[in-house]
Image (cartoon, rainbow over all chains, first blue to last red; front, side):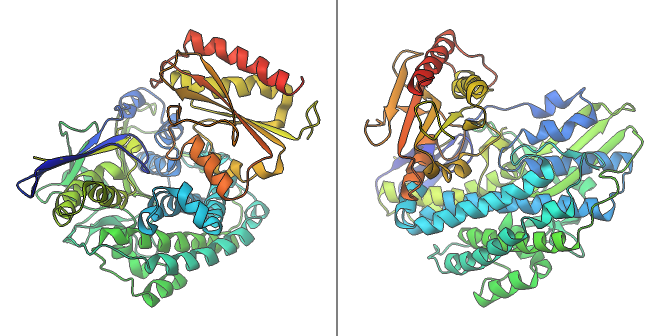
Length: 429
Length: 155
């Protein structure tokens, strides 16, 4: 076989700017690099010296798709320093705003970015010409997710209503009730979508992954829980730094995370599904089992099914919360500022998002650490590509390139988050 | 709502105010908002275009303003009528979003949501660096585009 390098200079349908480089020599893959060009954004550095009050709004700016995740991880981390206990209704609102973010983010990725791969379209524009109703419904679903974020967060992207201790203002029951009918439609559409998506054709590809996700005794995880894996990891959030480290790699502006002594790991919808299946709502479990989609699924291409199941769960959970919600007397709880170090880890749409802050006695940030899910998945994506491309080397370059891009999109990488564009190079020598 | 030439119109400025010349769409729209209020929508980094395209079918005229990356000199103004002028591949509308401006227009078309008339103003930018300032050329063209849009609407 001819040696060559396949390059994709601009990887489309991912969030942010990056490229992929695959080198093939004597018929073997000899190098894979997922290059992240998006410049480092230095959020951790410019948080230093700012008040803890500004942290949720500053970190929300890291991402336009998952700002709620940044707000949630940051407030939980800071609240752990001050010893804040969040009462029921505020806790429910936090779960509800997260449901909104999962719905909009998952709808965007499933239908606009990833589904065209499975249906053989170059992009959603061409897919929309043949499947206008599907795209129309997907846009409606995304809008419903955004609407939840808007009602609770004040606006749909980069919400402004989240604060340490709760929210600046709580929505009335009536305001939430207004989206109930839309959510019921979204739940039905999600069930239809799972059935459609589970019957797509998936490449035969499995690896012995270490899946990592939060786990909570009573619920599918959003904001709280222990960090667990299918290989025995079971730690509290404040032990994160002892088990996970970030490494610099020369070809990327994003750091790569590994589990100390074990290496790459997998976070996101498939990891959550595999580790928390029993905590899904009854309807989500039933639909998944009916389609024989159950843990432990080791095919990363089936992440799109997990994402669809989670969308259904988020609709269901949002409906439950709205029906039980009673507006709190006060939208936040009072607390005293203390110095210390706090840890927060919540389930962003793409996987666990870890924050650590050290604050002084006035509540000013002395040190910050933020580990987004995409940088936790980057090493795993490279390993997938290494193995996956090796099994398809006989394909023409154009097809091989497409398959590699599809494999990258399994992880819904958000390059903007990870750096802190994607281009692909496959070189055959 | 009707413009002075009787058209039910919508103006949409697209861009990122934190990336140098990518702010041109936002700056033009901000100015026009003072004249036309709710008939002007500003799509910055914090807002998503896909919800807006679903309303386009309700309008006679939609005017979009965005920054363009091109080999032409900075500040050059393009006025393109969708479906009439060819929107050439050499024109790259700058986007920090995963789905760009032209893709959104194409999706609107596929979904039957295009307005009767869609006009795109593109201003060629020079510097799109994060945190960068708007260039002198792009700023001057913003003023010119405002004049042209006002004249187009008979204002």
